[in-house]
Image 1: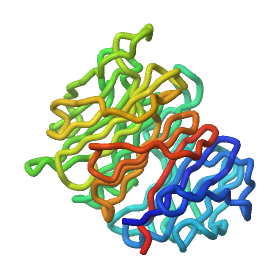
Image 2: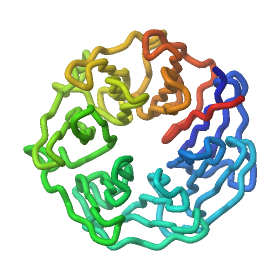
Image 3: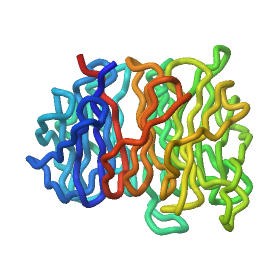
Length: 327
């Protein structure tokens, strides 16, 4: 199976790795090669259609899997931390910002800020909208996670919003880094990650059960710090990026094969030198994962997380990634 990897960095712009990361190219134009690219998204109905955000500039798009790019919208007044397509209507695109949330109904040509329940202040300053996810079974339901302001939901396609309130016993449980939905056959589970681990809700966010990952040797914390989460391929796999803290001195990947009930830390060919930060999967590439650390190490697996390879290429600070199927 052949695929391309796209990586967004802080200070190093956007990189594209062809043939699974064998050959790399920095995108030199039209976007600034020294820019901050914090968010990427792929169109669920057109795998070659990609979006990328550039701090202080706006949103760019590619229609050929990441080789050529053009600006589609200006959004200069605040950084964009997340991008997502509505799977029910891919002309509808969401851009999570610092702070707030914008939406487009014209394929990304123009964006309008949404009136949400998100705060514009938090314990560390200005909140960041880390993920926006549309329920694949209900086009009206949208979830947005915020660092540090918890989880917010709309039941009417973004016209009105509600906060899901406290997700745990202290305010930093609402420091939500990762968010995904998982259909377990009977109901839709909400899965979030915070510095404390993985939170799961099977009652629409009313109650949360938390799983703490084992700490790292030498860490001052009694649990592993958690970042990105994925529940790909429509089966019982759940994958979580962890580390000792942020940016951290070491990291790991936790994998569950029973829907998140139990986890196992995978064996990597080289210990990460920072917290593992981001995961890229694609429904057309079952079993394929690209995982990256904060400081630029990239690991790939093509056999459902059984074995891993570290790519020779390392980059600077990686903030987001995608894998794109190729013919």
